[in-house]
Structure formats: C-alpha cells, structure tokens
View (tube, rainbow, N blue to C red):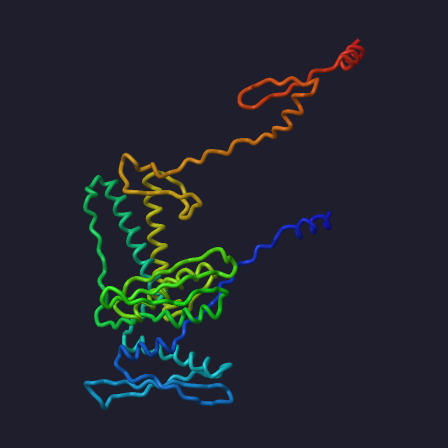
Length: 349
C-alpha cells in the first residue's frame, strides 16, 4: 500500500513557483541626469583598489548663492567582481543620497505603478461615496473628488529607458529590427521597431512611439513601451530607483484597504457574504442605482450531465432491455428471459 501511494505521488507533477528574472537598471546614467538637474558638475569615477575591483564616485556640489559652501561627496562602491560593478554600486548609493538631500523625484516604472495604485484607491473611495449616497438617498449627479496636487519645490527627473532596454536585450532571448526614427511634420520625431520572441517566431509585435519634438524623447517613449511589453512576456522584475521604497509599499497597502472598504460597504448594502476581491468571471459594474444594483451579480448555471451515447446504443440494442423516457434522461429496465422466469417459479413452488 505504501509503495502504491509513493507511485501515485510520483505521478503528480510538482508545481514550482516561478522565479522572476531580476534586472537592475544602470544607475550611472541616472546619476548623471540628477547632477544635470541640480546643475552640478558631472560625477567622476575613481579606482580605489584595482586588485579588489574597488571604485568610488565623487560628486561636487555647486551652490550659486554661497560658493564657499561647495562640497565634494564621495561614495565607495566596495569590492566587486569587476570595476564596472563597483562603479554601479557607488552610483546607486549616490543616487539615493542625492534624492534625499535635494528632494529629487525620479519618475520610473515603480513611480508610475505607485501612481496607478494611488489613483485606483481614489476611485474605490469614490465608489464608496456613491454607495453611501444611495443608502442615504442623496443626489449622485455631482460627486466631489479631491485630487491632491503635485508637491512644490521638487525637481523631476524622467528615467532614460534606453540603457535599460539595451540591458534587457543582453539578458532575454529576443530578436528585433533596428530602432528606426524619422523626422517629419516640422521638427517632429517618431520611432518604431519590431520585436520577435525566439520562443515564438510567428509572433511579431510592432511598437510605434508617439510623435515628439526631440529625438531623445521619441526614442525614450518607444523604449518604455517595449519594456512594458517585455516585463510580463519574460517575467522580469525591474529594480529601479523607487523599487521597494516606503512610498511604493504604502501605495499598495492603501489601495488594498480602499478595496476592502468598498467590498465591505457593498456586502452590507446587498447582503453579500464574503464577496471575493478577485474572481475568474468578468463582472461589469457600471454606475449603480436602485434599478440595476444587482445586475452585476452573475448566475452560474451548472454544467449538464454528460452521458455516453455508445452506452445507450449498446443497452438499447440488447434483446432483454427496454428503454423508457423519464424526463431528460433515459431509464433502462431489464426484461427477464423465459429460462429465468421458469427457474424462479420452480424455487417458489
């Protein structure tokens, strides 16, 4: 019995968790963008110990109001496999330190995802207000929404996606055409390219960027669009500037809290017990009202019982079977033979 169980256990395939491919953005271009935004001189990289591949980067601050307060900030990368890796670690330290000291806001992939989570939480909060207005019988034609403004005295730095796209192409198995750019419509630029994954040569994706006023902007928008396609296609996890920061964690937490609050109010209103937040069914919830408040609750019809047609034919063709139709399913009765009837009479007598 134990061996049989072991054999059955071996037949069941083991489901392993899918591990995402982590790709870290190049931080030395980001550091250069930040120093340019602060009007600092370009950062300079130095070798601290060549035998240990230890490097550091120095950033000179430039304060126009008080030139005597100019400082030189030094960030050590530490021992690494190569000098380039140590320079990347030093650049990453410099980026995070300059962001805290001078209030730099880097708009990268994580920043945009946080913005989507914040907006999603605001919409769930607005939906809760709509439900509460229905319960109170108030007017729902004009729901006021408070949209927070952007912080003041914050320098915005838009991430350059071209270095990240080059790094992704060196990591994943993908083929592409050249990134083409054309100038048209009085100093307007448009970039495009075609992506062909190696695991599916028949699938081609065409990516066309928006029309921009500069060449770098057109290429950057296209690179971002291609990266957004490659992340789910190749299960990539991008480690950028705002990766796993406090704001990104709180944005996800606030969105989940607003969703739970909305489901709680909705459950009390329509007397729904433990409504799941995620479902395999596509449910459309439009503007809610008394006449269509329950129209979005789907009704699942049970699947019909499948019967084997060849079994019906074999049983019906037998000489001692009688088929009677009782409802939607046939019922079979066995007719005893003459020999079975005579033997039964002999036993009774």
